[in-house]
Each structure stands twice: as structure tokens, then as C-alpha cells.
Amino acid sequence: MASRFRKDHRVPRTVLIEPFDLAMHGTEERQIMLQNRFALWLRGLGGPARFVTWQMPADLSPRIQYITEMTQAADDPRRRSLLVEYRRHYELLQADADYQRAICGLAVWSDPSQTARALARSVAGSFDTFAMDAPWPALFSGDYELREPGGGYRGWHLAPIGSPGGRPLYAFLSSYQFQPTVWDFSRPFKSLLSRGFPLAVCIDIPKTWDRNDAINELESVVQAYSVHLATMRGEDSRSIKKVNDCRQALEELNMGDALHDVQIVVALTAPNARTLRDRVDEVVKLVKPWFGLRAEIGEAQSEAAKFFGTHSTKSIAVPHTTWPVVSRELALLFAPLGLRKLAGLDGTLRGEDAGGAYPVFHNSWRDKRATHEVWVGGSGYGKVRRTAA
Amino acid sequence: MAAQFKSNVRLREEKGFGSVSMKRLIFCGVGAVLVFMVLRFTVLSNVALPMLVVVFILLLVLTGSRGGLPLWQRLLLGLRGGIVLAAARNPHGLSAQVAQMLNLDPAVAHLSQGTVFKSKQTAAVDADWSEWAVFADLDEAEGAGGLRFLEEVGHGEPL
Image (cartoon, rainbow over all chains, first blue to last red; front, side, top):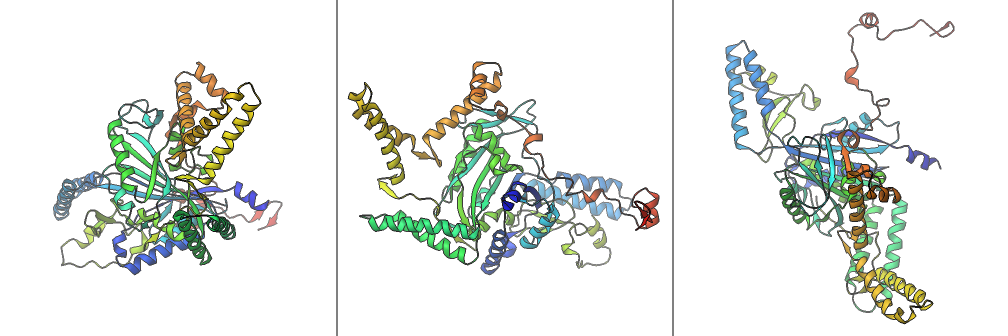
């Protein structure tokens, strides 16, 4: 009764997490360590959790505007010329690139006594990246309405109402099957998040099983299949595979992993129905070797938008087609954390990401992880000003 | 760094006939036999046997899964969506009455940013620390009407 009371009073705590560069963990050993670190944190989950990545097109305009304003306000001619050079550099970067910005968020339903700040500290320590307690950004702005198939797209979708003002259409796709294949930190999310259009991915974890309950559940499945195989005439390869999978899962559970129910929800956007159809087809085809996606039907389409907020999974009226995974598998679904895009434009330009596609800015006044820095250069080359720029 | 994902280890789907699982075959068979038995006691007893076959095939088709959902559920979701949309467009029409009868909420057809993505993080527990004023000196704080140290609390009891 006491545990039921606690469960009913769980409240969502949200944090925003800055993606890091997975290529910095370039060796096999480092990536195994990263997976183990994620898995260890996930083993400790006591209630529902949700991980979301939002990706949208971005550019350096705010930074260029900031530098322009600084140039106009600068009194020192040397400083002004240096700032003009910076602006030119940013404009060159802008002209050659097609940037996207990504941010990740994590929500955990926990006891009211646990604060979001404690969660942020726990996440920052376990995932080794910057995390802060903050509400999640809204997936879309303004009002939307449910639309039936038509206008070039054969599925249900959401369309903006009122003055559209360039707001896109939305389609929500849910996973229903995970393929028994090899997943890693780059497959399938790297290719999914390389699409050149805005999208959001939600990894919903509505339930983390108690270890004993999970073991009992899997053992009963093994027992039932053993009886079936003993009485079966002929070959049943799927049942044999299932028994092997159950035994492997049991071994991993006995080594300390937890069993989680997981569902992936993808939100796609497009300016019109035909483009939405093309993008939905593209994404469904792209991830098919790893997991199956279905477009939600009817009112489930509008309900699925709630996965990108802090509504509990039980209150979201969609068909819940979750898939059981152990912690070390679930850790790989957090791969978007390691796919750095154009992060914040705050701070100083420090270089490029490992892939060379994105400039990396860092404000060491705000993020105290890098307080010890050495700037090398001759006198008058702007070390101090560059740090302050 | 990689993991071999597994099949659904919690789902039992013993082999039945062809691609149809044993569970589904048993469900369709039991459903068809029930219809057959009921019809045998009515004036339609002469069509009971053909109905047994028809119902069996119908149930088999309706329970066929695509996108993780059986056909009957996909049809039901589409129908509910259609009713909800019609009720939202015409709140005083027949569809609105049908929606009310089926306990469907036409409001789900409209989504607002403010309601769907409203943060439920309670301010009582998570105060925004950025709004806290930090003073360099205690006197400065007391002068600003902020933090105050009392020498006595309640009924004259010392702090």
C-alpha cells in the first residue's frame, strides 16, 4: 500500500542536457565505457522516464548580430578590426554550412522530495556532460488541429490553425517492433538525425521492472516455450530464438541489468502534405532494419504530441506497443546525446567538432568544467579580447 | 559498444499454422465455434456451418497485425478519429451526439502549445535560484527588506 501511495504521487522532473561529441570517445574501449556508464545510471531507474531530442535548422545569425553590435560599440580600433575579422569568419562558415541545432531533455517521474537540481547533478555526473534543471521547450508554437488523410499525405497529421505564419505540419510515428539486429551508438540514430529537416525523437520508458518480477516473467516464458518445443513436431526456429533470447536476457538481468519497457516516438515536420509524405516514407524506410515505425491513426496522432511534454505515459491515449530491453541495450538508445550539432552560440569559438561540420562555442564563465585554460600567443594578438568576445 | 537486440522476450507467440500464431488460431476457432453453436439453436441453423467458416476467416482477417496493431483496432481508431473530427467541426450536429454517446472528447482534435507542453515542474519544490538576490553584506540585505535575523521568536522565546 505504501509503495502504491508513493507511485501515485510521482511528479515529473525535467532537465536539459547538452549533447557532446561521440567522436571524442573514439576508441572501442571508450565507447564501451560510455555504454556501461549510461547502463549503470539506467539500472537505478525506479520509475518512468523519458528522453527527448529536438533537432531544428539553425544558423549563426544571432552570433553575427552580436558581433556586429560589439563592433559598432567598440572604441579601440584594434578591437574593432579584430571583431570585423570574426564577423567575416562567421559569415564564411554560415555560407558553406547547413546547420542544425539539437538539444536533449530527460524527464524522470520521481518522489516529490527529489528535486530537478539533484536529477541534473546525477545526469551530469553519469553522462559526463552539462545538464541543467529546466522545463522542456515546446515542440510547436500556437494551436494545431487534427487532420484526416488527404492533401497528398495518406496518414493522419496535425496542421496549424489560426495564422500559420510558416508553422509546419506534424506527423507522429511510433515504434512497434525492434529488430533483432546489432545496434550501436551511431546506428540507427546518426543517420536519422542527419536528415536535413526538423524532427524530434522521444525514447519513452514507461516502466522499469523490479528485477525479481522481470526474472519471474522471463522464466515463465522460457518454461512455456520449453513445453511447446517438447511437444512440437517439426522445426520452430522462432521459438528456439525466443528461448535463447530469454536466457540471454536472464543472464544479463542476473548480472545486474534492469528490464525496461521502451517505445520510440518520432515527430516529423514538413511545410506541406506532399513533403510530409516523402519525409515519413524516408524515415520509416531508413530505420526499418532496426525498428518498425507506424503513423499513429486518428486521435492517437494528436495524443502522441504529449510524448514531447511531461504527461505521464498512462495518460496518453495511444496504443502502447512497448518493447522490453535490458539496460545495456537501452543505453544505446541515448545515442543522440553523443551526436553534437550546433550547440549554444554562447561563449568563445573554440574550434570544430570532431567531424568538422560544426563550430564549437564554449563559455567557461558559465560552464565551470573548463576553468583551467592556457591561451598562447604573441603580445597584441588579442588573447584577452578573444576570451572576452 | 554494440548490443544485439533481442526479440520481444515477454511475448508468447507459439507457432500455429503458417504465419498465424497458435494464440490467434485458438481465438478465431473459439469465436467461430461460439457463433456456430448460437446459430444452431436459432432458425438460422441451416446456415450455421457456412457461418462457422465465414466467421473464422473474418476473425482471422480482423486480427491480422500491421504496424503492431490488429486490423480491428486500426479501423476503430480511424472511426473514432473521424467522429471526433466531425464533432469538433460541428459541435451541435449528429456526430457530436454520437461522440458524447461513445464518451469521446472532441477537444482532442485541437492542441494548444500552452496546454500540451506546459511544464508540470512545481515551483514550490524547484525555486528559480536565478531570482534570488545575493548581497555582499548582511547589513545590505537587512536594509533591502530581505533576510532578517530575529532576536526573539513567538512568545518571547529566545532564538
